Image 1 (cartoon, rainbow, N blue to C red):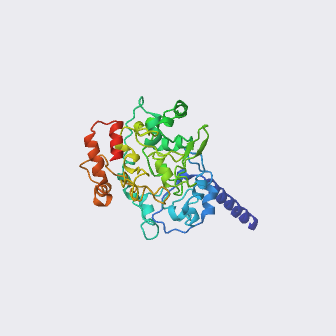
Image 2 (cartoon, rainbow, N blue to C red; image 1 turned 120 degrees about the vertical axis):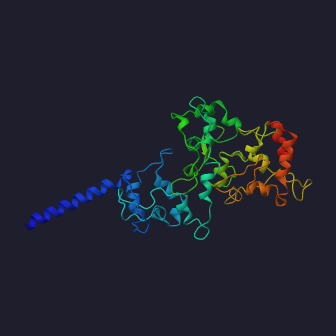
Length: 353
């Protein structure tokens, strides 16, 4: 009888272990706990099961992405974002299976960690993008920046650069995907952030067509300036400023005849002019390209500027028209009024204002 009891206990233990191991790899059965006040199990337990989970666009392990993030290096751990996993085991509840902006804000509130305005992202220009594509008019050149999948996938191929590169025959042949571009999503959190929160590293191509790191600020880091300018092109990978139009004497970006869509038209400051020089003109807002937050110094996640509107006001346009900015935007708008036709000449006039 005793031996029979031991056999039954042994069998039950074996079945429990098998159920645990089988459940660990099943993220589709994930539940949600009512709170994150659940015991923690540590990263090792998470990695055991989730190391096999792959980013569907980059084919990278989400664990390898997490390992590069600050959330790993500051010892916050997987459960710092997802909540305690003591009840999870691959099939049970976990508080935050897909952490959202509100979850991020519990730490990124300016007290525990650097404050962000990620909660405002849902009303941003990025989140509200209307791709304007149909089954017959989806353009790979446009999808490169105006969709989540395009921004990530084409970055892997190094499709980043000026107008001449983006429209070259060798480049456009690479912009063919075995995917339906009309089903691509608008830009979202995962477009810029890998699993764990690290910024996605961007890629470019050298003259020989080799895929290399996109590093226009030449600091050997994958940082905010690199990420933002991979779409909002301002500087080529060799450090050359990409000015707005062909008549400016530099390589033109794709929206070369729309000054409101060109960073150079409002941000480029000619290094030959300025304080202490022969001409004291400052033609654009100077970007601290190698700083920690060169774009977020002024623009947060909401990214609403309304630059080309003479009537709509945002915090950015209000400041740009103020004395603190030297009334710079007023000069840009006056240049547009004097050159009302949307073309290269208008862009050049705005840049020189």
